[in-house]
Structures are given as structure tokens and as C-alpha cells.
Image (cartoon, rainbow, N blue to C red):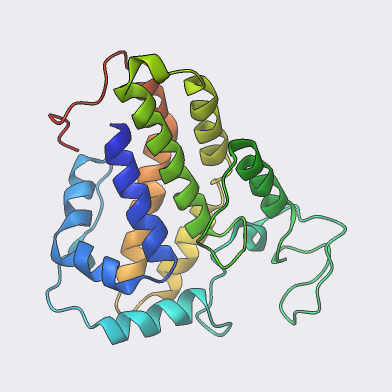
Length: 229
């Protein structure tokens, strides 16, 4: 289970960091359709099984949604969706105001930075924005990889509880993905690929928060290649 989670989080981190080649490979391989089948929700995957996706079109779509401020822009970081922003925030950005939602590097970013420090982790994704969705997923992938290594080696389980606590804390800070997914669904109304991927990411993280971490806490045997997820 831990290794399966590593793969999913790694793919999500790459996609929300703009690696369109990995998105196209996952689409061509039916990865998301396969994942949707095992998640406890009725997920629409029609937009994820279309053949011959245009990488240039997807790249433009990604930039319009997550990079370039404009009519379709949706900030992919938690601070922009905070309903209780930090009071001390200051910025000369035209679309961020002190004391209002939408700020850059607000309290959620500081909270994630503390989690990274606690784990001795430095994200390479997310444009140096600690609460960027790509950084969240990269961190979760790294934590799951640590867990998998500990489960593989019965003599190396020291710190396993701490790793799982960090996973739970990270997932608990992803509540904003609900608002984010709704916003992407409202803006990605042409290709629909990013809306569908975000919906799967929201469903997967909700499942992982409820079932995945809890299931791993009950694991007493090392990971086996018979795991089919």
C-alpha cells in the first residue's frame, strides 16, 4: 500500500508542477481511469480516456489555470484559499491584499514549512511556495517512501509512528483542496482534463486521510509485490 501511494503522489506532484509529459503518459496508460475504479466514489473519467491528447494545448491549459493570473487563473497554493488569512501579510502584488484571502505565503505556507523542517525535507516542486499543491504531493510521496522502506525492513521501523503522524498532519492541511477542485471545475470547461485530475486528487487524498493512513497503521507485514493497487 505504501509503495502504491508513493506512485500516486509522485504522479500528482509532477502534474501539478506542470510536467505535461507525465500527464499525457498517465492518460495514454489509463492510469487515472484505473485509479478511479478503486476509489470509493463514482468518478467521471471520460475526459481522462480521450486518445491523442495535444501536449501543447494541455500546456497552455495548465498555464492559464495555474501559472498566469487572468480570467481562468486559480492559485494552486493553500494561502490563496484561506478563509482566515494572516494579519501580518504584506505584498505589492495587485491580486493579494493584506488581511484578506488570496495572499501569497500566508499562514498555510508557514505551517507547511514547519512540517518540512520537522521531516528534514526540502521540496523541489511548487516554485518555492511551501503550500503549493505540487509541494504537498511531493512531500506525501517522500513520507510514503520512508514508510515503505521501514515496512520492508522489520529492523528499521524506528520513527514509523512519526512518519505516519506527519502524513496525517499533511493530509489534515489539505482541506482547501475542496474549494480548489470546485474552482478548477468551473474554469476548466474546454478540455476538462485538469478538472478531472483535480477531482481524482481530491477524492484520493480524502480516501487516504480516512483509510490509507489508518490501514497502514494496522500493517504488520512488509510490502508485498502482490499488492495490486
